[in-house]
Amino acid sequence: MDPRPQAGAPRLAVAIPTVGRPAILAETLCELDGQLRLPDEVLICPTSPADLPCALTSRAPLRIIALPEGTTPGASLQRNVMLDATTSDIIVFLDDDFFPARAYLAAVEAAFTGNPGLVAATGTVLADGATGPGLTAAAARARLALDQAANAPAGGDAPVAGTYGCNMAFRVTTVRQHGLRFDENLPLYSWQEDNDFSRRLSRHGRILRLAGARGVHLGHKGGKTSGVRFGYSQVANFAYLVRKGSVPAGVAVRHILRNLAANIAHAPSPEPWVDRRGRLRGNLLALADLLHGRCDPRRILSL
Image (tube, rainbow, N blue to C red; front, side, top):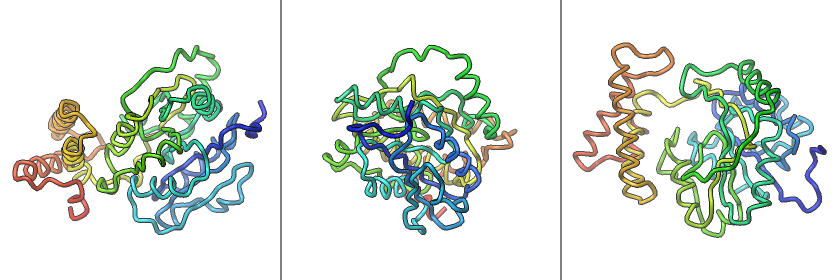
C-alpha cells in the first residue's frame, strides 16, 4: 500500500498535545513513520522547548509542525490550538504515549470517507497502561506485533456515546460549522474534556468505535496532574458537565461514586503508581465545595 495520500483523498492531520515527555513522544513519532497511510500533517503543541525531542521538524517522511512553544499546560487549551491550526479535513488526536497500529490512519480515513454522517470516531485499544503501572515502549510494540501476527478478525464498528481522549478523530468541517471547542474551563489534565466534546458533537452525526483502528495506550505516568488536583477533578468536572448539560446526571453520579469507592478502598495500601490518598483528599474537597455551592473545576489551579 502506498503510504502517500491518494488523489482526491481527504487531508488528515495527527494532533498531539504534550508536556514533559520528549522521549516517549519520540517513540510515538516512530510509530507514525510506519503508517500505511501517512498523515498530511503532524501538529504538536508543547508547553516549552523541553517538551520536544531533538531535530523534530527534520524527521522524514512526516511533515511535523511544532506550534508556538509556551502554550499554557492544559489538554483542552492545547487541543484547541491545534484545532485552530489544522488545514485538514479530519483531525486525529493522539496522546503522546499512544502507539497506533500500522493500519490505524488508513482505517480512520476509510471510515470517514465511507460514512458521510460520521462526525467522530475512536479506536480499539488493545492494551491500556492507564489502568495499571503503565506499559513500556517495548511491551506496547510486542502487543501490536501479536495483534498483527494473529490477523484477528477486526469485527464490526460499533456506535458509542463518546470518544476516548488517547485516540479520537473528528470531522473538522462539522466541528467548525457548529463552533465547537474543547472546554477550557476544564484546566490542566482536563478530565472528561474528550467526553464533553464528543457528546456535544454527537448532536450533529454519528460516533463509532472503529474495529480496524487499533493501538496501545502506554499510560505513561510522567507529566501528570497531582493526586489532589486529579481527585478534585474527578468530582468537580462531572458536576460541571451535568450543569452544562453535556453529560447525564446518572452517568456522572456513577463515575463519581466509582472513583470515590476506589480511592477509599486503596488509600490504606495504595498502588505505587497512583496517589490514592491525594485523590481521596481531592474528592472530599470537591464534595465539600459541591455541598456549599462553590464547586468549580478551575479551583485546581490554586490547590
